[in-house]
Image (cartoon, one colour):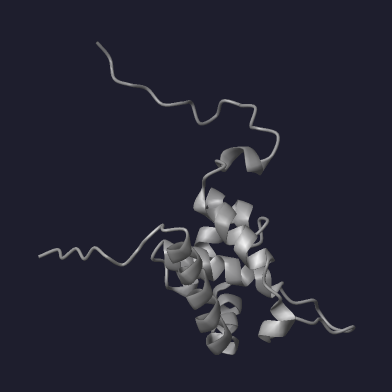
Length: 143
């Protein structure tokens, strides 16, 4: 009896037609995407919510906020790790449309929007409580 074999790395395969096929309908990234798209970034006063007519265009603050919410949900706090994950994590590729901001862009977004992001995270937590995803009734202690 042999071992369970993996796929040949050099074998050409037909991938699904789009990256959306890899993300299930009940994947939490779909909630993040819908939640952030529902926010009024100008009203919340996110930095660069309005673009200038000249110069290099910035990253959309919606995309960087999605990246941060995903990071907090998955315990990825480091700007460098978040930057790396954008190039290898299929959920993040789907969530931020295959953008790959460098760690400095990610860190600057957090620094420039710290107060606004605190309120957004509070709203997101309240949304999850409303849906009873977590209720705060159970405390687990690991010794």
